[in-house]
Image 1 (tube, helix red, strand yellow):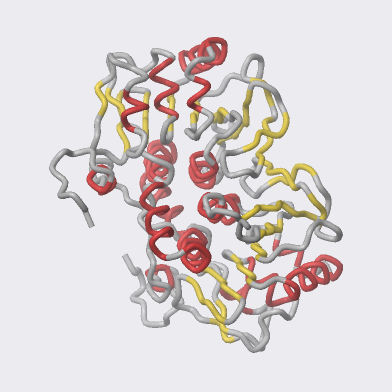
Image 2 (cartoon, chains in turn blue, purple):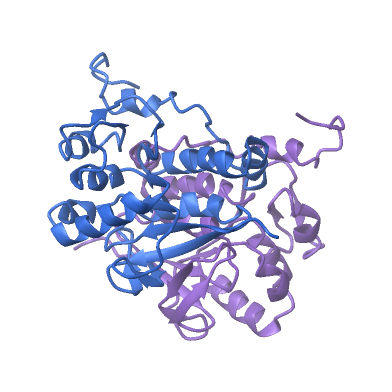
Length: 213
Length: 213
């Protein structure tokens, strides 16, 4: 009997950040027996911050439930934190998922939905003040490439999502598989979750000289 | 009078590699006055190797001509090298572009269309034998993150496209802009085109021990 398939649902919304979605999906797309499901408020084309559109196959409200949920960031998050109906759908899906991943300001959406209360989390280093204001009962970690706390794995800005995704791939399919996937895609995997030069570059640590370069 | 807009056309095809397209577009999407145009044989949703689909807005045959052309790789290239009509459309667009970029096995398509004859180029390190067999009058460079030869900029596999794209962004908008964009997207830009650990990892240099790890 083949191993049961797992599924990963991706939450698209207008003005999502391209690499927040497709960096992780490049990696998750190679995991055996992992089905990727693209979700949005309405099925169809969803336009990114950068312009190009991706296709959502199912609606958040009634599309298939998935074992893993991936929430990207992007300029669209700024409006969505005030969209109670969207936050309800997000909370419902996250409650039923085994693993909830976010990239960049996606953790602001999770926080505003109350999902990160009592948890440690991180976010984009340029939008850290905004993201961390979305949840006051969250322990916001300034210096981290990603933070894994129970079922929530939140990554820093944009490209950090690829490093986080490979760590999750390691959990799903083994560390050797993740390492070999990084080599195959010629990606220099930064596999240490605690190493984060961008916290200092973006002045979050409070000990930076005036010009950190 | 505002600076004239430039345009970048992306060639989508069934089974394109997700990150080959969206890594570079993450970066190009922030270049001021650069319009992104998504092209394919037919307008509409185009499915990637990994599963998710992106939207093509215009047809390769009669969509707007663009100043820059980006050709990704992916499993779909294996069939396209035998599609003479596709190669004609690619050649026609490339001939009229100021700059032609490829990621991964996309350089195999350029080579098969005869565009790289007399030029230096590189490709994916795992599919190097296949890609380099697509053009015998090309000087194939085994050890390079990307190769810039006149109007052709060919990158190595998948993630290398992001490093190459930032170099092109530097040419379009200045090196300082490119560096700041890498920081903003929390991407550790490998900005040296000649540094390529993956050539050795994938055994292309002929001096590797049996197990390079």
